Image 1 (cartoon, helix red, strand yellow):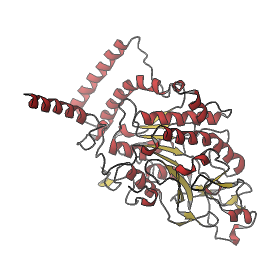
Image 2 (cartoon, helix red, strand yellow):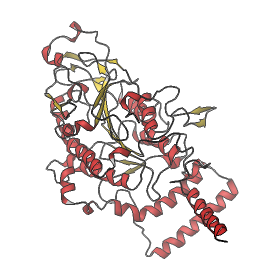
Image 3 (tube, helix red, strand yellow):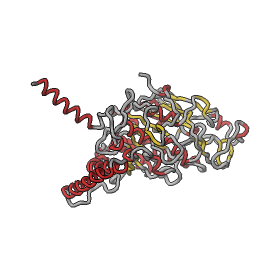
Image 4 (tube, helix red, strand yellow):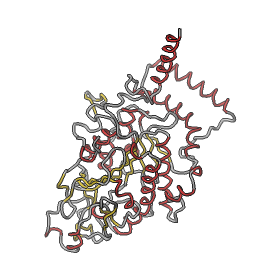
Length: 466
Protein backbone atom coordinates (compact mmCIF):
# COMPACT_ATOMS: atom_id res chain seq x y z
CA UNK A 1 0.00 0.00 0.00
CA UNK A 2 2.82 2.43 0.90
CA UNK A 3 4.72 1.58 -2.30
CA UNK A 4 1.68 2.18 -4.49
CA UNK A 5 0.85 5.41 -2.65
CA UNK A 6 4.40 6.70 -3.09
CA UNK A 7 4.34 5.96 -6.80
CA UNK A 8 0.96 7.63 -7.08
CA UNK A 9 2.15 10.84 -5.42
CA UNK A 10 5.27 10.75 -7.56
CA UNK A 11 3.16 10.53 -10.69
CA UNK A 12 1.11 13.51 -9.57
CA UNK A 13 4.28 15.52 -8.95
CA UNK A 14 5.72 14.47 -12.30
CA UNK A 15 2.55 15.54 -14.09
CA UNK A 16 2.67 18.94 -12.42
CA UNK A 17 6.33 19.44 -13.31
CA UNK A 18 5.77 18.32 -16.88
CA UNK A 19 3.05 20.93 -17.27
CA UNK A 20 5.45 23.63 -16.03
CA UNK A 21 7.60 25.02 -18.85
CA UNK A 22 10.40 25.58 -16.36
CA UNK A 23 10.96 21.81 -16.14
CA UNK A 24 9.40 20.19 -19.20
CA UNK A 25 12.23 21.04 -21.57
CA UNK A 26 12.27 17.64 -23.25
CA UNK A 27 8.52 17.14 -23.47
CA UNK A 28 6.65 17.77 -26.71
CA UNK A 29 5.28 21.29 -26.56
CA UNK A 30 2.87 23.50 -28.46
CA UNK A 31 4.97 26.43 -29.53
CA UNK A 32 2.03 28.79 -29.77
CA UNK A 33 1.46 28.45 -26.04
CA UNK A 34 4.87 29.92 -25.25
CA UNK A 35 6.41 26.64 -24.14
CA UNK A 36 9.89 25.45 -25.12
CA UNK A 37 10.00 23.62 -28.42
CA UNK A 38 13.02 21.41 -27.92
CA UNK A 39 14.76 22.27 -24.65
CA UNK A 40 18.46 21.63 -24.11
CA UNK A 41 20.69 19.83 -26.57
CA UNK A 42 23.64 19.65 -24.18
CA UNK A 43 24.66 20.84 -20.74
CA UNK A 44 24.36 24.65 -20.62
CA UNK A 45 26.99 27.01 -19.27
CA UNK A 46 24.53 29.93 -19.08
CA UNK A 47 20.85 30.16 -18.20
CA UNK A 48 20.22 33.81 -19.07
CA UNK A 49 21.50 36.49 -21.43
CA UNK A 50 21.90 40.23 -20.86
CA UNK A 51 22.59 41.92 -24.20
CA UNK A 52 24.08 45.40 -23.82
CA UNK A 53 23.35 46.89 -27.23
CA UNK A 54 25.57 49.85 -28.09
CA UNK A 55 23.41 51.57 -30.68
CA UNK A 56 25.26 53.23 -33.56
CA UNK A 57 28.59 51.41 -33.56
CA UNK A 58 31.33 52.30 -31.03
CA UNK A 59 34.79 52.82 -32.43
CA UNK A 60 36.97 49.76 -31.84
CA UNK A 61 40.19 51.77 -32.07
CA UNK A 62 38.98 54.13 -29.33
CA UNK A 63 37.67 51.52 -26.88
CA UNK A 64 39.25 48.03 -26.74
CA UNK A 65 41.59 47.75 -29.78
CA UNK A 66 44.51 50.20 -29.44
CA UNK A 67 46.45 51.08 -32.59
CA UNK A 68 49.62 53.13 -31.94
CA UNK A 69 50.17 53.69 -35.67
CA UNK A 70 47.07 55.86 -35.78
CA UNK A 71 48.76 58.26 -33.39
CA UNK A 72 52.09 58.02 -35.21
CA UNK A 73 50.56 58.85 -38.59
CA UNK A 74 47.77 61.12 -37.37
CA UNK A 75 46.84 63.65 -40.06
CA UNK A 76 48.37 61.70 -42.93
CA UNK A 77 46.53 60.52 -46.03
CA UNK A 78 45.24 56.98 -45.28
CA UNK A 79 45.83 56.06 -48.94
CA UNK A 80 49.55 56.09 -48.20
CA UNK A 81 49.15 53.00 -45.99
CA UNK A 82 46.19 50.98 -47.25
CA UNK A 83 43.46 50.91 -49.87
CA UNK A 84 40.54 53.03 -48.72
CA UNK A 85 37.25 51.44 -49.68
CA UNK A 86 33.94 53.30 -50.11
CA UNK A 87 32.20 54.19 -46.86
CA UNK A 88 28.64 55.13 -45.98
CA UNK A 89 29.13 58.83 -46.76
CA UNK A 90 32.44 58.78 -48.69
CA UNK A 91 33.76 61.85 -46.92
CA UNK A 92 37.21 60.46 -46.25
CA UNK A 93 39.57 62.57 -44.19
CA UNK A 94 43.00 61.93 -42.73
CA UNK A 95 44.26 59.18 -40.44
CA UNK A 96 42.74 59.94 -37.05
CA UNK A 97 44.60 58.95 -33.91
CA UNK A 98 42.55 58.10 -30.87
CA UNK A 99 41.90 61.05 -28.53
CA UNK A 100 42.10 58.64 -25.58
CA UNK A 101 45.01 56.78 -24.06
CA UNK A 102 44.94 53.04 -23.44
CA UNK A 103 46.22 51.26 -20.36
CA UNK A 104 46.49 47.60 -19.44
CA UNK A 105 44.19 46.46 -16.64
CA UNK A 106 43.75 43.50 -14.35
CA UNK A 107 46.02 40.52 -13.94
CA UNK A 108 45.52 39.68 -17.61
CA UNK A 109 46.59 43.16 -18.80
CA UNK A 110 43.71 43.71 -21.23
CA UNK A 111 44.00 47.19 -22.82
CA UNK A 112 41.04 49.48 -22.20
CA UNK A 113 40.83 53.13 -23.18
CA UNK A 114 40.20 56.07 -20.87
CA UNK A 115 36.59 56.06 -22.06
CA UNK A 116 35.82 53.15 -19.72
CA UNK A 117 37.55 53.63 -16.35
CA UNK A 118 34.90 51.58 -14.51
CA UNK A 119 34.67 48.72 -17.01
CA UNK A 120 38.47 48.63 -16.93
CA UNK A 121 38.26 47.45 -13.31
CA UNK A 122 36.41 44.36 -14.64
CA UNK A 123 39.00 43.58 -17.32
CA UNK A 124 39.66 40.11 -15.92
CA UNK A 125 35.99 39.21 -16.48
CA UNK A 126 36.00 40.13 -20.17
CA UNK A 127 36.42 37.97 -23.24
CA UNK A 128 37.29 40.58 -25.85
CA UNK A 129 36.70 39.68 -29.50
CA UNK A 130 38.49 42.06 -31.88
CA UNK A 131 37.70 40.41 -35.19
CA UNK A 132 33.94 40.77 -35.68
CA UNK A 133 32.63 41.64 -39.14
CA UNK A 134 29.21 42.47 -40.51
CA UNK A 135 27.73 42.20 -43.99
CA UNK A 136 26.07 45.61 -43.87
CA UNK A 137 27.48 49.16 -43.54
CA UNK A 138 24.12 50.86 -42.91
CA UNK A 139 22.39 51.01 -39.53
CA UNK A 140 18.98 49.49 -40.27
CA UNK A 141 20.22 46.46 -42.18
CA UNK A 142 23.14 45.97 -39.79
CA UNK A 143 20.75 46.12 -36.83
CA UNK A 144 18.50 43.48 -38.33
CA UNK A 145 21.57 41.37 -39.02
CA UNK A 146 22.92 41.71 -35.48
CA UNK A 147 19.56 41.03 -33.87
CA UNK A 148 18.08 38.42 -36.22
CA UNK A 149 20.90 36.95 -38.30
CA UNK A 150 19.39 38.43 -41.47
CA UNK A 151 19.52 41.86 -43.07
CA UNK A 152 15.87 41.48 -44.04
CA UNK A 153 13.08 42.93 -41.98
CA UNK A 154 10.70 40.59 -40.22
CA UNK A 155 12.93 37.70 -39.13
CA UNK A 156 12.83 36.38 -35.55
CA UNK A 157 15.22 38.07 -33.14
CA UNK A 158 17.78 36.14 -31.12
CA UNK A 159 15.75 36.73 -27.94
CA UNK A 160 12.71 35.18 -29.62
CA UNK A 161 14.77 32.19 -30.81
CA UNK A 162 16.16 31.60 -27.32
CA UNK A 163 12.71 31.64 -25.74
CA UNK A 164 11.27 29.51 -28.54
CA UNK A 165 13.86 26.83 -27.89
CA UNK A 166 14.18 26.98 -24.11
CA UNK A 167 11.08 28.69 -22.79
CA UNK A 168 11.41 30.78 -19.65
CA UNK A 169 11.89 29.98 -15.99
CA UNK A 170 9.66 32.93 -15.12
CA UNK A 171 5.90 32.39 -15.03
CA UNK A 172 4.69 35.94 -14.38
CA UNK A 173 6.98 38.03 -16.58
CA UNK A 174 7.79 37.82 -20.31
CA UNK A 175 10.69 35.55 -21.20
CA UNK A 176 12.23 38.23 -23.46
CA UNK A 177 12.35 41.79 -22.10
CA UNK A 178 13.78 44.89 -23.78
CA UNK A 179 14.56 47.69 -21.34
CA UNK A 180 14.31 50.86 -23.42
CA UNK A 181 16.60 53.61 -22.24
CA UNK A 182 15.13 56.03 -24.75
CA UNK A 183 16.64 55.02 -28.11
CA UNK A 184 14.87 52.36 -30.14
CA UNK A 185 17.46 51.38 -32.77
CA UNK A 186 17.08 52.06 -36.49
CA UNK A 187 14.93 49.22 -37.76
CA UNK A 188 12.45 49.75 -34.93
CA UNK A 189 10.66 47.09 -32.95
CA UNK A 190 11.34 44.47 -35.62
CA UNK A 191 14.80 44.20 -34.03
CA UNK A 192 13.03 42.51 -31.10
CA UNK A 193 10.23 40.76 -33.00
CA UNK A 194 9.24 37.13 -33.33
CA UNK A 195 9.02 37.11 -37.14
CA UNK A 196 7.53 33.83 -38.32
CA UNK A 197 7.80 32.31 -34.82
CA UNK A 198 4.68 32.43 -32.63
CA UNK A 199 4.00 35.98 -31.49
CA UNK A 200 4.26 34.99 -27.82
CA UNK A 201 8.07 34.94 -28.18
CA UNK A 202 8.54 38.58 -29.23
CA UNK A 203 10.29 41.03 -26.93
CA UNK A 204 8.26 43.03 -24.43
CA UNK A 205 9.47 46.62 -24.11
CA UNK A 206 9.81 47.94 -20.54
CA UNK A 207 10.69 51.45 -19.41
CA UNK A 208 13.36 51.68 -16.68
CA UNK A 209 11.18 53.89 -14.49
CA UNK A 210 7.60 54.40 -13.40
CA UNK A 211 5.27 51.48 -14.03
CA UNK A 212 7.60 50.00 -16.73
CA UNK A 213 4.67 49.08 -18.97
CA UNK A 214 1.42 50.87 -19.70
CA UNK A 215 -1.89 49.87 -18.10
CA UNK A 216 -0.28 47.56 -15.57
CA UNK A 217 -2.73 48.58 -12.85
CA UNK A 218 -6.32 47.39 -13.08
CA UNK A 219 -8.94 50.06 -13.75
CA UNK A 220 -11.85 48.08 -12.31
CA UNK A 221 -13.19 49.09 -8.93
CA UNK A 222 -12.42 45.70 -7.41
CA UNK A 223 -10.45 42.54 -8.09
CA UNK A 224 -13.70 40.60 -8.17
CA UNK A 225 -15.05 42.75 -11.01
CA UNK A 226 -11.85 42.25 -12.97
CA UNK A 227 -12.00 38.48 -12.46
CA UNK A 228 -15.54 38.38 -13.83
CA UNK A 229 -14.45 40.30 -16.92
CA UNK A 230 -11.50 37.99 -17.42
CA UNK A 231 -13.74 34.97 -17.05
CA UNK A 232 -16.01 36.38 -19.77
CA UNK A 233 -13.03 37.00 -22.07
CA UNK A 234 -11.76 33.48 -21.39
CA UNK A 235 -15.11 32.00 -22.28
CA UNK A 236 -15.26 33.99 -25.53
CA UNK A 237 -11.72 32.86 -26.37
CA UNK A 238 -12.68 29.23 -25.79
CA UNK A 239 -15.66 29.65 -28.12
CA UNK A 240 -13.39 31.18 -30.78
CA UNK A 241 -10.90 28.30 -30.50
CA UNK A 242 -13.73 25.80 -30.76
CA UNK A 243 -15.12 27.53 -33.84
CA UNK A 244 -11.94 28.48 -35.70
CA UNK A 245 -9.38 26.03 -34.34
CA UNK A 246 -5.93 26.76 -32.96
CA UNK A 247 -4.17 29.69 -34.63
CA UNK A 248 -1.01 31.48 -33.54
CA UNK A 249 -2.60 34.93 -33.42
CA UNK A 250 -5.44 33.70 -31.23
CA UNK A 251 -3.28 31.51 -28.99
CA UNK A 252 -0.74 34.31 -28.52
CA UNK A 253 -3.47 36.80 -27.67
CA UNK A 254 -4.90 34.44 -25.05
CA UNK A 255 -1.48 33.89 -23.53
CA UNK A 256 -0.82 37.63 -23.50
CA UNK A 257 -4.06 38.21 -21.59
CA UNK A 258 -3.04 35.62 -19.02
CA UNK A 259 0.48 36.98 -18.72
CA UNK A 260 -0.79 40.55 -18.39
CA UNK A 261 -2.92 39.49 -15.42
CA UNK A 262 0.06 37.83 -13.75
CA UNK A 263 2.23 40.89 -14.43
CA UNK A 264 -0.08 43.10 -12.38
CA UNK A 265 1.62 41.84 -9.25
CA UNK A 266 5.06 40.98 -10.64
CA UNK A 267 5.92 44.25 -12.42
CA UNK A 268 5.29 46.68 -9.51
CA UNK A 269 7.41 44.44 -7.29
CA UNK A 270 10.12 44.30 -9.96
CA UNK A 271 10.16 48.08 -10.28
CA UNK A 272 10.60 48.68 -6.54
CA UNK A 273 14.24 49.69 -6.87
CA UNK A 274 14.00 51.30 -3.46
CA UNK A 275 14.26 47.75 -2.14
CA UNK A 276 17.92 47.83 -3.14
CA UNK A 277 20.41 49.06 -0.55
CA UNK A 278 21.80 52.57 -0.83
CA UNK A 279 25.28 51.16 -1.49
CA UNK A 280 24.03 49.08 -4.42
CA UNK A 281 22.17 52.04 -5.92
CA UNK A 282 25.27 54.20 -5.59
CA UNK A 283 27.46 51.50 -7.13
CA UNK A 284 25.24 51.42 -10.22
CA UNK A 285 25.12 55.22 -10.47
CA UNK A 286 21.52 55.84 -9.48
CA UNK A 287 22.63 59.05 -7.74
CA UNK A 288 24.83 60.28 -10.60
CA UNK A 289 24.81 63.94 -11.58
CA UNK A 290 24.60 62.85 -15.22
CA UNK A 291 21.02 62.00 -16.20
CA UNK A 292 21.85 59.35 -18.84
CA UNK A 293 24.00 57.50 -16.29
CA UNK A 294 21.04 57.39 -13.89
CA UNK A 295 18.84 56.02 -16.68
CA UNK A 296 21.28 53.29 -17.67
CA UNK A 297 21.94 52.49 -14.00
CA UNK A 298 18.23 51.76 -13.57
CA UNK A 299 18.33 49.61 -16.72
CA UNK A 300 21.28 47.54 -15.51
CA UNK A 301 19.80 47.13 -12.03
CA UNK A 302 16.50 46.01 -13.53
CA UNK A 303 18.38 43.56 -15.75
CA UNK A 304 19.90 41.93 -12.68
CA UNK A 305 16.50 41.78 -10.99
CA UNK A 306 14.96 40.21 -14.10
CA UNK A 307 17.67 37.55 -14.17
CA UNK A 308 16.96 36.81 -10.51
CA UNK A 309 13.32 36.21 -11.46
CA UNK A 310 14.20 33.80 -14.25
CA UNK A 311 13.68 35.98 -17.33
CA UNK A 312 15.64 34.29 -20.09
CA UNK A 313 16.79 37.11 -22.38
CA UNK A 314 17.14 40.81 -21.53
CA UNK A 315 18.30 43.52 -23.93
CA UNK A 316 19.21 47.07 -22.93
CA UNK A 317 19.02 49.93 -25.42
CA UNK A 318 21.05 53.10 -25.00
CA UNK A 319 19.88 56.24 -23.22
CA UNK A 320 19.71 59.55 -25.06
CA UNK A 321 22.72 61.73 -24.25
CA UNK A 322 21.59 64.93 -25.92
CA UNK A 323 23.55 64.25 -29.10
CA UNK A 324 23.72 61.18 -31.31
CA UNK A 325 24.01 57.54 -30.26
CA UNK A 326 27.46 55.97 -30.75
CA UNK A 327 27.24 57.16 -34.37
CA UNK A 328 29.85 59.93 -34.38
CA UNK A 329 30.26 61.06 -37.96
CA UNK A 330 31.60 64.27 -36.47
CA UNK A 331 32.64 65.50 -33.04
CA UNK A 332 33.97 62.07 -32.10
CA UNK A 333 35.48 63.13 -28.79
CA UNK A 334 32.41 64.69 -27.21
CA UNK A 335 30.00 62.13 -28.65
CA UNK A 336 31.89 59.04 -27.53
CA UNK A 337 32.65 60.56 -24.13
CA UNK A 338 28.97 61.30 -23.50
CA UNK A 339 27.88 57.81 -24.52
CA UNK A 340 30.64 56.11 -22.54
CA UNK A 341 29.89 58.21 -19.46
CA UNK A 342 26.27 57.05 -19.63
CA UNK A 343 27.02 53.31 -19.65
CA UNK A 344 30.46 52.80 -18.09
CA UNK A 345 29.67 52.85 -14.36
CA UNK A 346 26.37 50.91 -14.62
CA UNK A 347 27.92 48.14 -16.75
CA UNK A 348 30.84 47.69 -14.33
CA UNK A 349 28.40 47.62 -11.42
CA UNK A 350 26.28 45.00 -13.18
CA UNK A 351 29.27 42.71 -13.70
CA UNK A 352 30.46 43.12 -10.11
CA UNK A 353 26.97 42.71 -8.67
CA UNK A 354 26.36 39.52 -10.64
CA UNK A 355 29.73 38.19 -9.51
CA UNK A 356 29.12 39.05 -5.86
CA UNK A 357 25.75 37.30 -5.92
CA UNK A 358 27.14 34.17 -7.59
CA UNK A 359 25.09 34.81 -10.73
CA UNK A 360 27.70 35.76 -13.33
CA UNK A 361 28.81 32.21 -14.10
CA UNK A 362 25.28 31.40 -15.32
CA UNK A 363 24.53 34.79 -16.90
CA UNK A 364 26.02 35.61 -20.30
CA UNK A 365 26.63 39.34 -20.72
CA UNK A 366 27.26 40.54 -24.29
CA UNK A 367 28.41 44.08 -25.23
CA UNK A 368 28.13 44.88 -28.94
CA UNK A 369 27.19 47.43 -31.55
CA UNK A 370 26.11 46.69 -35.10
CA UNK A 371 29.54 47.58 -36.58
CA UNK A 372 32.65 49.67 -35.82
CA UNK A 373 34.21 52.88 -37.11
CA UNK A 374 36.90 53.78 -39.63
CA UNK A 375 40.51 54.44 -38.53
CA UNK A 376 40.49 57.59 -40.66
CA UNK A 377 38.35 60.64 -40.19
CA UNK A 378 35.05 61.46 -41.79
CA UNK A 379 35.55 65.14 -42.50
CA UNK A 380 37.81 66.47 -39.76
CA UNK A 381 36.80 64.94 -36.45
CA UNK A 382 34.40 62.04 -36.94
CA UNK A 383 34.53 58.40 -38.02
CA UNK A 384 32.36 56.68 -40.62
CA UNK A 385 30.81 53.20 -40.42
CA UNK A 386 33.16 50.23 -40.65
CA UNK A 387 31.76 46.66 -40.77
CA UNK A 388 35.10 45.12 -41.79
CA UNK A 389 36.58 44.71 -38.33
CA UNK A 390 35.25 45.73 -34.93
CA UNK A 391 35.22 44.74 -31.27
CA UNK A 392 32.64 43.19 -28.97
CA UNK A 393 33.06 41.54 -25.59
CA UNK A 394 31.35 38.89 -23.53
CA UNK A 395 31.51 38.09 -19.83
CA UNK A 396 30.25 35.33 -17.55
CA UNK A 397 28.14 32.46 -18.80
CA UNK A 398 31.02 30.10 -19.52
CA UNK A 399 33.27 32.37 -21.59
CA UNK A 400 37.02 32.50 -21.14
CA UNK A 401 37.51 35.49 -18.84
CA UNK A 402 40.47 37.80 -19.24
CA UNK A 403 41.10 36.85 -22.86
CA UNK A 404 41.50 38.48 -26.26
CA UNK A 405 40.48 36.70 -29.45
CA UNK A 406 41.09 37.76 -33.04
CA UNK A 407 42.80 40.85 -34.40
CA UNK A 408 42.47 43.65 -36.90
CA UNK A 409 45.31 45.00 -39.01
CA UNK A 410 47.81 47.49 -37.60
CA UNK A 411 45.46 50.38 -38.32
CA UNK A 412 42.31 48.69 -36.98
CA UNK A 413 40.64 48.74 -40.39
CA UNK A 414 39.93 45.08 -41.23
CA UNK A 415 39.83 41.80 -39.33
CA UNK A 416 42.86 39.71 -40.29
CA UNK A 417 43.00 37.00 -37.61
CA UNK A 418 40.16 34.66 -36.55
CA UNK A 419 37.60 36.62 -38.50
CA UNK A 420 34.14 36.11 -36.96
CA UNK A 421 30.70 36.76 -38.42
CA UNK A 422 27.48 37.60 -36.61
CA UNK A 423 26.31 34.02 -37.29
CA UNK A 424 29.31 32.79 -35.28
CA UNK A 425 28.36 35.04 -32.39
CA UNK A 426 24.80 33.71 -32.43
CA UNK A 427 25.97 30.10 -32.66
CA UNK A 428 28.28 30.62 -29.68
CA UNK A 429 25.60 32.32 -27.59
CA UNK A 430 23.17 29.47 -28.25
CA UNK A 431 25.84 26.89 -27.48
CA UNK A 432 26.54 28.48 -24.11
CA UNK A 433 22.80 28.26 -23.39
CA UNK A 434 22.81 24.55 -24.16
CA UNK A 435 21.37 24.82 -27.67
CA UNK A 436 22.81 23.41 -30.90
CA UNK A 437 22.17 26.19 -33.41
CA UNK A 438 21.84 23.68 -36.29
CA UNK A 439 19.03 21.83 -34.49
CA UNK A 440 17.01 24.80 -33.25
CA UNK A 441 14.77 25.17 -36.31
CA UNK A 442 11.27 26.22 -37.34
CA UNK A 443 9.55 25.10 -40.53
CA UNK A 444 8.64 28.16 -42.60
CA UNK A 445 8.42 28.83 -46.32
CA UNK A 446 9.19 25.24 -47.19
CA UNK A 447 12.45 24.95 -45.25
CA UNK A 448 13.73 24.54 -41.71
CA UNK A 449 14.73 28.06 -40.69
CA UNK A 450 17.19 28.88 -37.93
CA UNK A 451 18.82 31.92 -36.34
CA UNK A 452 22.16 31.21 -38.04
CA UNK A 453 20.59 30.47 -41.46
CA UNK A 454 23.04 28.03 -43.12
CA UNK A 455 26.16 29.49 -41.53
CA UNK A 456 27.75 29.92 -38.15
CA UNK A 457 30.16 27.93 -36.04
CA UNK A 458 30.76 27.82 -32.30
CA UNK A 459 33.87 29.78 -31.31
CA UNK A 460 35.32 27.26 -28.90
CA UNK A 461 38.42 29.35 -28.19
CA UNK A 462 36.34 31.87 -26.24
CA UNK A 463 34.60 29.18 -24.15
CA UNK A 464 35.98 27.81 -20.91
CA UNK A 465 37.06 24.21 -21.16
CA UNK A 466 35.07 21.81 -19.00
